[in-house]
Picture 1 (cartoon, one colour):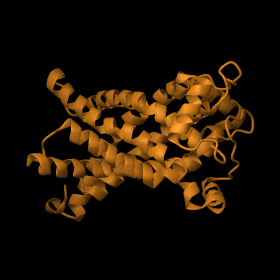
Picture 2 (cartoon, one colour):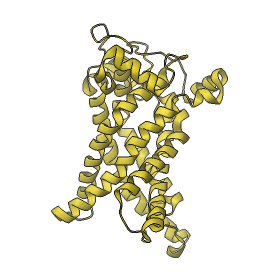
Picture 3 (cartoon, one colour):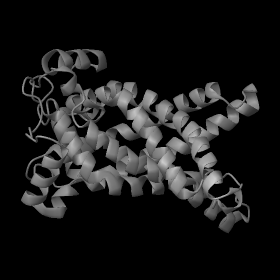
Picture 4 (cartoon, one colour):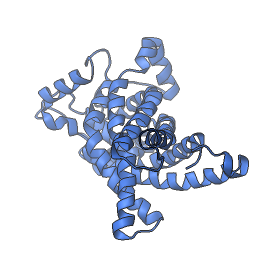
Length: 309
């Protein structure tokens, strides 16, 4: 592992590369989560019916600019989220393993899940204002609008309007749902990645390399999507609301299920899976490579003995 700062940088760079490829599916996912909001299934619109259909509809009506709305905010958010997640996970894990087992190399599922969740929650708190604006930019459509529409010129315009109208509290609207969502996802992402990696090496004899990283990332991405999607839907609605349509996470969950049925919390799960699998694969696979590059730079600048694990 590189230093904490090095791992933060490596994780952020890897996540930005991944989000560039997967952002269109994120836009479709958010619009599917918002379409038919608090309407019965019989009366709700179905403008976006799946990942491929959604992408084609948006590109046809709004062009590439429409499908990549909010990409600037997505980059900043991913740097903060995955920088924290990949930068703080290993130092926290090693510290707890040393404290509890007197051996930093000990792998314990409980410790791994706790450190994954904690590092993810830190990233979610840091990046929440940018995810808020990203969600509102992506949900906006002059052709097929869904949910509340927010007309921001760009990310900075969105941040400034929210701050002027609602203050700091407005910028952190929905942060509770974001922390739950990211805590759920982060608690399983890195532990399942490293678990799958160890099992593939032990039982299938796979060697370190792109094939091992790809297989481990695929397993991790699938588990992340299953665990994270319900709070992700709640978060999207809390972020996009105008005023006080929902009082909080539980109120949003109750209203959504009561009005639209239980499976409403899984709206957009296919685009989410279409996004999260390649995103996780690219993020974790690229992180392996960027971490190696950062290590080399640190060894040249700091020397191999000064790296803090």
